Length: 145
Image (cartoon, rainbow, N blue to C red; front, side, top):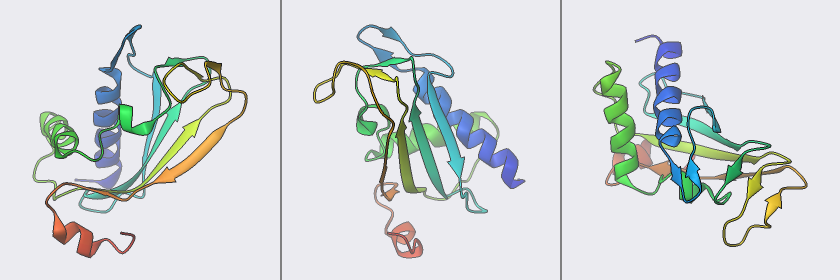
């Protein structure tokens, strides 16, 4: 499968998972979060991911782990299920090499540990890598881990 098609399908799968999020104050929906997949390996198993909390949108919190369960094999399984529904199968065990989180100035959060209301400045940080649970081969093959 051509890499741009795989990258688009992976971005769509993760975006759709986030769009299904339900906050205590309501649903999120399409486009609520910014998602970008980059540095995708040819087989689709390793990639970098950017998660953006957008200006003007309200979030329960700005903690990546609340919205992306990258520490869970269930998250990777759901990504693969969504890829399979798009006709992409047999993706090897996955690794998110780097999660880049962007909180735009003006993003609104009201969760524990966050300053209520719009964020007054942009915040960026990196986490990772995250490996599909039970996959020592991916850890050995990933020079960034």
